[in-house]
Amino acid sequence: MLNKLFRRNTERPNLMLAERISLVKNEMIPTHIAIIMDGNGRWAKKRALPRVAGHHEGMKTVRKITRLANDLGVKALTVYAFSTENWKRPKMEVDFLMRLPEEFLGTYLPELIEQNVRVEMMGEIDSIPPHTHAAVNKAMLATKDNTGLVLNFALNYGSRSEITKATQSLAEQVKQGKLLPSEITEEMLSQHLMTCSLPEPDLLIRTSGEVRLSNFMLWQLAYTEFWFTDTLWPDFDESCLLDAVESYQKRNRRYGGLKGE
Ligand code: FPP
Image 1 (cartoon, rainbow, N blue to C red):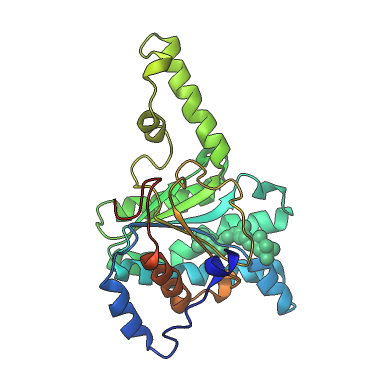
Image 2: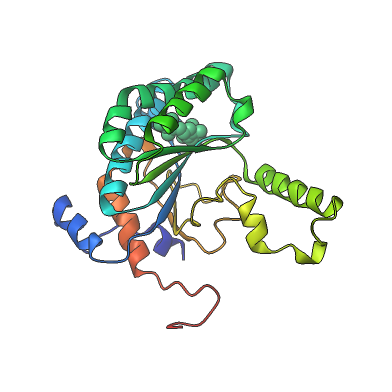
């Protein structure tokens, strides 16, 4: 099973990238890809660099992958940039991570605009530093009318907290007599999540060999196809994204039903 999940593309190793891209475009493209970008620290350690050098390199990977995902016709790309648990890291690393959106958007916003990408953010935004919030807000405003890929940053995001807040909000409606407990549906809960405007992810990618969800989109990933790779996030390139999408294109999604239904 794990072998299948970790399988790299060995069938068409000599195809040029452009040719692979055009073949992939002929098949079903995942509408929403979610990525747990893991392995930045190990990438840096292997090079005797500080951990933050790995995060900085990882930022460049976000640029590459956004560009290709948009080109493939992916509609939404959610990247796990900072979890509600990441505050436990050393202050210096947290400060660096909270500066990265500014650097990323400060450097690449013009090309995101040119590529028709719309920037979005989900997470407990009130507790991120004002400078981070301001940088992302500025990009969201500047790209709000764009119709290409939605680049959704999960920033100070935690799925259990998200589900808890959605539940509290529905409970409040019950308390006010607007809703009966028996009237609560899955759809209503989905509509109270931070992803309410996005389709559920079709494909989840986690890099660096870790095989867990780390409190990421637990509700939304119920029927998502998973792709795990040993590649560390800073090394994840266009060819790796194509590996993942090619694997997705061979999956038989049954949603609990039977093959062919
Ligand atoms: C996990 O790797 C990665 C993170 C907690 C941060 C992810 C952030 C980026 C990839 C930077 C991109 C951000 C923007 C805003 C463009 P890790 O540090 O846990 O790696 P390790 O497991 O090897 O230590």
